[in-house]
Length: 380
Image (tube, rainbow, N blue to C red; front, side, top):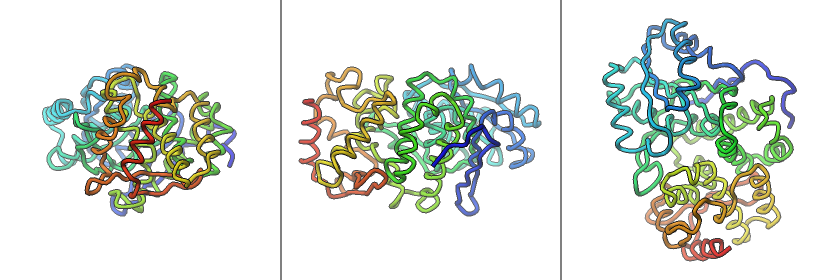
């Protein structure tokens, strides 16, 4: 597997869902084409943009200019950054703003931002007037390869991550890879965890390619578009086969059962970004798989080494404030994992590994064994 040598024309990945099929447009400097794409898709539409303060500073004017050039009326609403906006209060503010903007069923909500904005704006669109269509314009690596694709929208409960939400597919995703240049190194690394996830769970060749090309992805070369497009193709294929996560789509949660519990334990704060929690979670899932005899120790070490080489946390001790109550407590982490969306009749479901590139759904892992595993990892 090799990356293109030069930046090419935009790459289009189709999410095949029958009448609700939509395109993911990936490329450098594709944001200016947003207005023309929306006008072609929905002539005469009105729009409302939901974004956050930092994204607004960099990209709101360009987005509004693209819409204006296409003759599309728009308004905007700016939320605070971070997971704190994915709350009951945040959902109320966005919903009321969309109602005040007189967004109707035949109009569009535009989610301009990272995963938080996409989840929040998408959920507001899903419930506004019992369902308004929306467009994803993801501005973080994590959102471009994961949260903007597949129709999962929602907010957090104080009791757990993404426990309230709806499946609501966008009608278009426009992923401009140039906007990623404004991310901090930590934000970019956080998104990279989701890129690596696709290789670890289902594409050994892609994981090997990432091991050789991750520096070029960070630098913003053509490898970046290749990595994003490969990730989107992988997710699109799974979503097309299992839109509502009744089976195979659960594999996309590799690392998330642990990761979401760690996010909750750190108060959904900047102590631990989502992708950082996923990186620790993927490492723990690999190590648990090895302990169960499913995965070679060398493969578990390989996964951890790659994530650490990119600069991601891979151990519980790497998390800021590790010793604080709730994070260094195996029972507290087990209680948080018990709120995971994949719990069925009180039993945890884990996504584990049989090899790099081969994930499986495991619903029969003994909780006591998981608790002892976590206690061992907490003790270093």
